[in-house]
Length: 110
Length: 115
Image 1 (tube, rainbow over the protein chains, first blue to last red):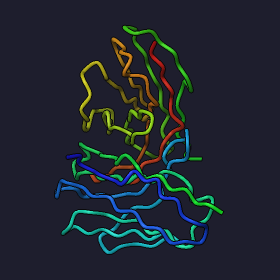
Image 2 (image 1 turned 60 degrees about the vertical axis):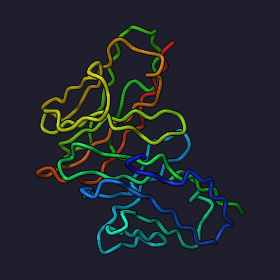
Image 3 (image 1 turned 135 degrees about the vertical axis):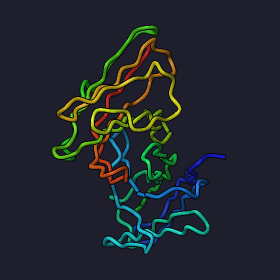
């Protein structure tokens, strides 16, 4: 079993739709969680950190569920420019390990 | 732009050769992490340098080594290149305080092809 797992997709949704991804992690000692987006042949860019209480940034909402060991990303009112691969990241307190998921591909259609 | 730069952009090497990749971190950041990303995969953590010392390592063999300099720039060295080393190599800088992992900012990467 992979330490961090994501549904690879692709998710193909119409513009304006709401879409959600989950990311599960296996190590309960994980302490820091992030979502990144990566456009084709570009570097990953930080989208948002994920806090225990959940956090929102505009159309994006991130949640952490420690009991079930997953994080989620919700995108509301999706735009064409949201088309990308979304990577979840889990790291441990010692920073000795930083694990990326394989990514979920999202395609927004007009 | 993140302010993280990497050189070279592209590189072609022959199996068995050695390569050095360079990364200049964002101003004010003290930590650099290196990743290998194969096509269609997420980045794989190679190692991290904090204050010029290796601070963590992923599942990569010893022929992958690195350095961090006093100005927090960094190098990734790979010896005895293998065909499977062909990938995008990313560095990411962050400001870490006492071992807590903060947000990372990535450079554009170096695309290495081993023939």
